[in-house]
Length: 302
Image 1 (spheres, rainbow, N blue to C red):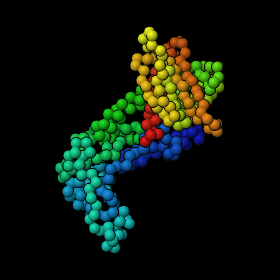
Image 2: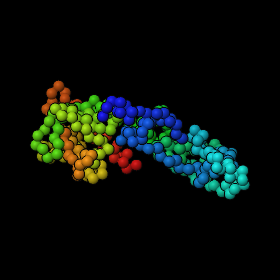
Image 3: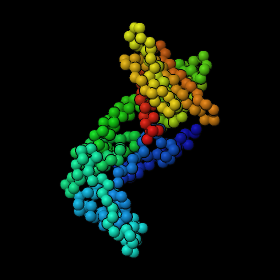
């Protein structure tokens, strides 16, 4: 792929959504495979855009959302219907979110409702006061989140601050393709757009991240008498997660579908002998890839 085409695919644009400013890919198909889509907000009204009267009524009662002033709006069709004396002029909408979905506090003129930018649910200010970075949805600034979602976002921040950098920098492995008995020494790293695993050695290979079907972590380091275990990351078609205590990562197998190929292809990465810290770097890279696989599964399961 030429650098010009790559740059065009990686181009981004600044957009304003109801939740805030986002820096998103110009082409949605070329977004990060670890990203999440914005959730639909729990509606304030059954039909919030039908006409103006319910908005002013709910604002007067203190039940309208104050999230960027964008939760309720009027459309030209609704205005035309209102001017023609259509059915939408009757106040028939009912409040669909009258209480905080965490503490059950009733919304009124003093207790305003807020939407969590991650889950889209309605909360009072006390239950949705934290503003936390949400990079998986490409927000430019920290955004309002409920306590549960804020905790998850804080945990994900470690991936973006530390582990993603490890994946981008790469590490050296002994790489085995399919059922071959031959292993090649290659550097494996994540591409800058986070869409490919790049393997460079005597030859070059690319594995599209979205085509990874299963990940299996190989570990060692258990007390004498206990056998080495495998740590699985749940992706479609793989076994459930089974954490392996104080085990140390020694390798990983990836199953993926190659374009134009039938069935699943297997790739095995094995950390080599420690030389100038390469074994330590490889182990850290494997742990980071294990976390990336979990995020990938969450994105697919959205």
